[in-house]
Length: 122
Ligand SMILES: [Zn+2]
Image (cartoon, rainbow, N blue to C red; front, side, top):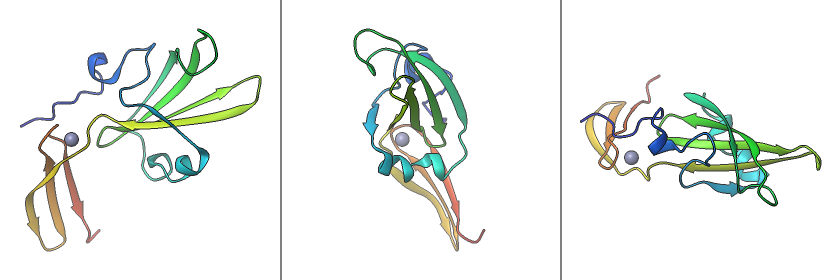
């Protein structure tokens, strides 16, 4: 089974003017412990979205996608000189072990097909 999620498909990740699905605001402490500082993003997107600022204004955001379909969003309020953060994921993975030996484990999500390999001998 191939993965069911495609990060290039707007129907799955939202369009240029939308927040990604399952978005939630987080504070600085959660941001400090987020994937942003642990992994290299697999994709970055610049978007302009509604709903993050007062009124009907567009807010410019950066979306950092990580392996496993999680993401972190960063944006700033120019006039108040503050930075804000959000995060989310496209799938609450339900991993099933496909292969396991010694230090190697390969498991696959039964919902989206995402496969992760962990080799703890590295
Ligand atoms: Zn999944």
